[in-house]
Length: 208
Length: 86
Image 1 (cartoon, chains in turn brown, orange):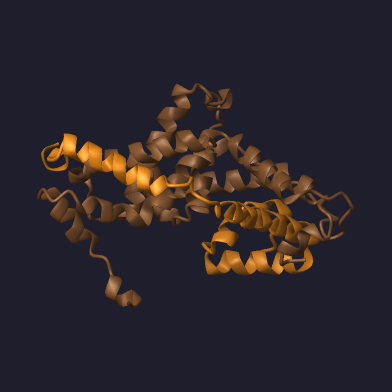
Image 2: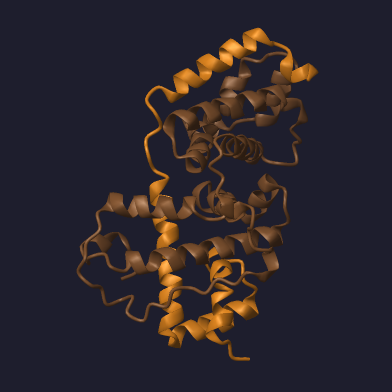
């Protein structure tokens, strides 16, 4: 079977589901199972809750499929529903960090990056890959919410800047600003720690 | 116009997304050619994005898909017309 034989007509699937043939919903969502779960897990960092959130997101998508507009991508719409599901769970768990209350105004926050004159001269201390993963996840989790969301949509979900704007419901310019802040905050926080990795651990950085 | 470092930092995210206009891109590239500090900031930021992408590749919970479709099936039976008359 060739790839071209499998071209999906999502519009037709959606029309069939709305006409009452709901079995097609299974087929419609199959390509998005992973991206929805990854988004939920990236927000919640808990397997069981992420799975439940992903299920809820798909159910909500089913229940309000008639509100889907064909001028957006179905995948982006699903991720937007997942984002909202993740947000409400974070609030329910009351782990939304206090800093979301005093998130700096968009226009008045400049992040100065970490200056690393010796980025290419690497000291000895080795960090295991899982330590790096844990450092990275912690740094992402601690970003102010609006920056974290933009970062996850763009760099974890790999949405385009325009799609990320659509998923959050803000302008493209605002997404770019949030992304920039998120990335600079992560650089500032992580670069000094990652710099201390040993050369053998850095072999999966192709730039050195 | 010559860019100062702090102006280049403002463009790093756009540079990594390939969304800078031609004029800004050229100025940033010229600056990066001779500025090790900004090059290091660019490299380290790019590394973080690569690490983030690496971290996305993990196994879904065992039988995630089966449980999802079973739950959908059960809910659809309860509310077969939900999507059309919501």
